[in-house]
Image 1 (cartoon, rainbow, N blue to C red):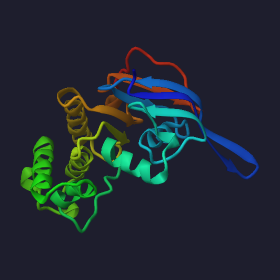
Image 2 (spheres, helix red, strand yellow):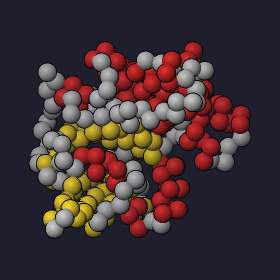
Image 3 (tube, helix red, strand yellow):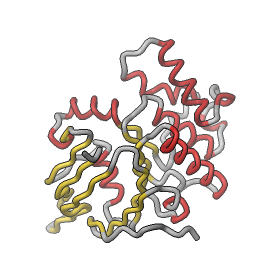
Length: 231
């Protein structure tokens, strides 16, 4: 059984007298352990699909099943609990809390779990080591480079051992060298930790790191090429 199953998944909203459909009866299966890149023009439904998978938004119609759970049917409280257990979200602009250190930013998701301080410390320390920032644990976001901030954001996304990591343009605000380092880190998380990764990107070089590339236009899949050529 696929980890993620979309059946006639639709998200629509009214704009004046018009109906806008960011997603239009999308059918899609994603396997556990996959690294999938979502590509397409602006407004094609990429981020909408990402937010539905992450439980941040709800479908208008159709079904979205993750790990056997039809998440569109969960109550708000149940959905929040499900999201804290199963989803790690990496944002383009990091979304770090500026008054918290790297350590404290990474620890934030763990405060939603029934863990002792020692257990939280062990998990944060492991995440810091994975992203190579042990020596920056006490630094505030303003004291870090963009690449380091994104690595803190990645550590925060993985610290609670989520089932799925979703990433919205994770290299979009980075220089070329930092972007390469972030993509190498995401590839390691996928291959070494078997994390399922779903990533929105406009960058062919970033997409080429993924195992599977999906193209969306007007809320629908338009084909799946065998490979993406970076250039």
